[in-house]
Amino acid sequence: MRGAPSGSTTATGPPTAGASIRWELVARPLLVLLLLLLVVATPATVREVLRRRRIVEGAGGALWEVQATLADAGVRVPTSSTPGEIAAAVAVLPLRERERHALERLRDAAERERFAGEPSPDHGRDARAVIAGIRRTIPRRERLLRALAPPSLVRVWRPAREDAEG
View (cartoon, rainbow, N blue to C red):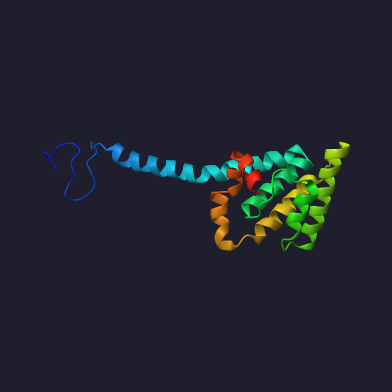
């Protein structure tokens, strides 16, 4: 259209070639959405980083991760628990046979590491099997909520209060 100001909309379509897009109208909602996604995903991301770090630390760290996964599943175990006490708390859950064997191996490896200084090369595989078994016991409708807002993160931030209560 002749005489139409640059940036105006023609009667037949989108803005003309010289039109400027108001980026603040697009950028603000997009930025708010990205920040919202970041806030929602941060606890799950922190929890996954902690999980990986603990499992790499050794059998004791892997058992600590099992204890945190129990907290995520709603089972409260004091942070001062021994490997045997943690294993006993897990053992009451409906685990599969291979997960039960992995739990026994992990408990034994954590005790050997703690009391005899013997490292275990297979603790990571056993820990992941036990963790998978614990997660499987969480009702399906609660799994997403517990993954996005893991109760074990609150426990990490306030361990003294948890131990005093439990």
